[in-house]
Length: 372
Image (cartoon, rainbow, N blue to C red; front, side):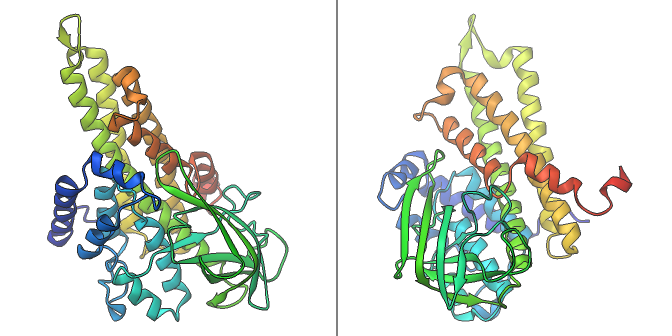
């Protein structure tokens, strides 16, 4: 397998890197967070201009048919900049639309940056079991409650899982629906998460909805979309860890103790080397999961996605905690970017399955016990 990025992917990464360096510094990010929308329209426009919204959309709908590796490159750079715009939410929901089929007009709007999307898969009782669905759909109307829909209030439309048949946790009987966020019967409670992104709890009461794909057969789409999100989150975490490691090293070179920079203390050097190793291992397993995403069977895709999410979650926690320790009390103040990076890494771990969830899922895949 070739682990080198193509020239086009390197150029894309450089373009995003230049945008973040020039127009998306820490102070600009803070201003966007403080707005009612929780992000900057001008920054969203820049992502559109860079072609990032068009990247995962098929060429027939005005996109570039980007694969998971291409998206990995994007998410690593967005992670380095701690970008808070609703990009991930939009592309994950767009992936579900592609799998469902028949939504070419909406995908064209996504490619042009005219449409923001979000998924509403989580329910209060379900934790990470996305098949545990109590929201019901009957006669084209949704009833029930979804929680922690990332950027749900900032989206124009939601991709919602609802039960049209079967028992509560059955894999069969789950359908996907498209819902207008501002439509009748939709009540949205928007709030800020600890990493300064936005999420929403959504109540449906006879809310009109459009069926996506075949009724009762949406589970494979939901599962693949969740795996897609997990791989992209891993890539974002790698970008965050790169920046946090660099910030920690820079701080250690300037902070003095006993008349010398603390970077000269061998114990701290060892800890920073461990942080670097965690980031590099995360990068490797994320690249593997992304490179094999389109080529693998569903069983292999689950195995690679869960292996990456579990390992990256472990690494993110270790890097974040070490960074806070080395920064000292400054490491947990909102005035310092390191604190925001630690918070983002923490939320990445708990989004679309934490370490324990994905370790269990990995061990449950066919062939694991025999191989062990």
